Picture 1 (cartoon, rainbow, N blue to C red):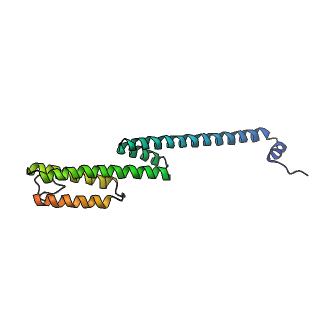
Picture 2 (cartoon, rainbow, N blue to C red):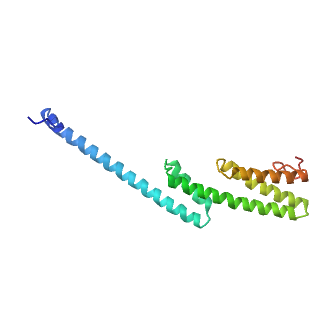
Picture 3 (cartoon, rainbow, N blue to C red):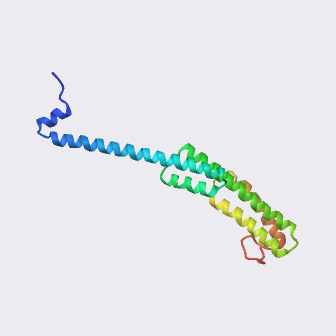
Length: 168
């Protein structure tokens, strides 16, 4: 004797239309899910490709913004993390170099006002990096750089956080 299928049970109860509608609904939901999944994967690939291009163009902030948008969608795979880490590292290195140039300019000038301005600008650049990327492996180096600037500012009798001329 053959085993009754789900359809046979529905036919016996006179519910074949309901059964067919339920199957169609399941098929539609499955197709919709697969379509949405494929669209999401295509968007992720597009965003990762665009982010790689931005990295090559040294547009690190833009690359990070694109990656963070993916992260907000719950897309945090290894490639997403890798590209974001690379963008953050390159951005930090660039900003540390800019801060270093300001620090060196401060050391070279005899003008106290300019020296203070350069030191504050250098300190501020580094402080933003620490606030924005606290989990970066480069934070230790940034904090060390900030301490060096702080000591130089103490020699001038100013605080990195204060207004110009304020004692620290």
